[in-house]
Amino acid sequence: MDSERKAELRKKFKVFSAIFKLILFLGIIVGIPLYLYFFQKDLIHSFSSMENVRALFAQYKAQSVLFYILAQVMQIVICVIPGQWLQFTAGYMWGFWLGYLYSLIGALIGSVLTYYIARILGHDAMHLIFGEEKIKKWLVHLNSKKAVIIVFFIFLIPGVPKDLCNYVAGLSEIKLKPFLIVSLIGRSPGMMGSLLIGRQIGTGGYVSAGIIAGVAVVLCVLCVIFRKRFTGLLNKGYDKLMKM
Image 1: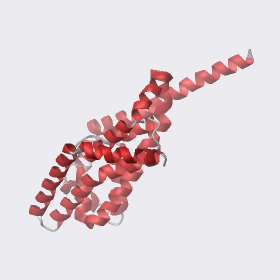
Image 2: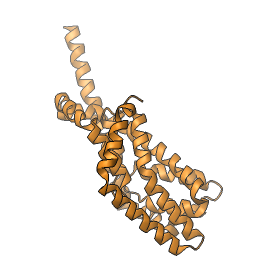
Image 3: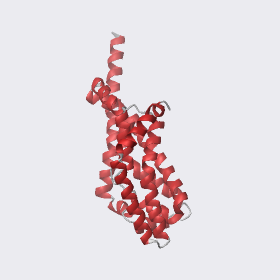
Image 4: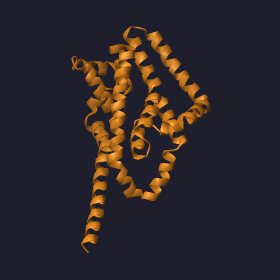
């Protein structure tokens, strides 16, 4: 009887723990963004243009690099915050290479955080809500070659809401290392384009900034047109990637 009672208590605790984690998870990915959108509009406005971001950075001159990295992390974790103007400003303030380094560090930290937030807080809850068998079927699709290729293109194409992918990856069984490689490589072209545009604006090269933006659009279109070739290359590296 004692063993049955202990088993029942463990089961109840597991359910309670999963529900508590789910509430925390939803609070991070839904509650905080809604709170900021409705009650902290000034904060969101601070990230809504290059002038606003530069004015915000001016308040943290001595710690501007650290503040930028933290802002990049926050933008990924709380996906309602605009991120494009951050990278424009980084290119303007620090140039291409330093801006890319700081942006990459912020994206790396933000991706790791969102991945583990989903894994720690959301994984058990998904099993509780949808059932273990159904989750296993979904994971087969989430961990497939096709899914990894889709993730790559989501991160590659500008304007696509990509940061929620970090949470989806955390809910799946995909390993952190291959996910980071795919997502950071996918992020890099858009990130580099934004940094270059910011750098050109900083040096007064508005025409050059426009040309870079045009080239970025053309490259994205070419990636879509020749997606089968890219898919072939990704397929070749998939098995090696998943072993990492």
